Image 1: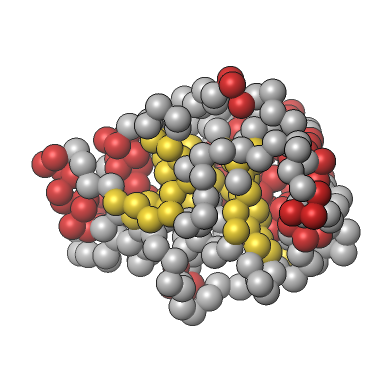
Image 2 (image 1 turned 90 degrees about the horizontal axis):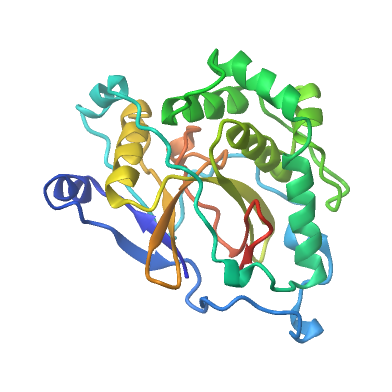
Length: 293
């Protein structure tokens, strides 16, 4: 089950004493832990990639974050003090359930998954060079470096409408073009940079009755303590942020994995990791080909 999580100021204080304080609300009340197989009724499937990521994508920031349940950290005077604290390490990549690796997904989802994988996996040498250009480092990356990458990409990003929703540019090509592209290009670039730093990301597509969107998430561990350390750093660094949003993935054994929203949309009109989530029906694509609905 995929869940949206929230961290409130009260919850943060409570966590410091109890190491507990996660509350959750489901993204989709109809969501289940079951992954659809290849025997689904074709009439129930998306028949066009453009239906997954429609042409009209909102590239601006909403004035109202919306009503979807999620994280909220209240701005406070001490928030900026934590920006100078030690930057937590980002946990190692998770291991995905092997029993789901042999599932045959509908072709529309397989095609989109392959497009993301190919775009993210292209031009590794050039990507590594760009990471050094941004961080000045070749190894030992932590959440500070991930935020530096986020800031750099968003400062330089120029939205470009893509008439062919089925074609994804490779990350290196988008960077060479001067960081120009739409939401799927952004997701690919951000995922490629973070992956080459040793982090793990997943790409989420979300559609509603008006349009669709794609965005990346950064894995921040399966430990409540580790996740809160990272979220607290992000809040301290971006003290003006009204919300720090993240989500939880519940595995079959009950273990939770935590993912930080790395979309370009930020609450209160600012760009920062943990911006408000785009509302819609979600499909999640993992780097090894796993797909969750």
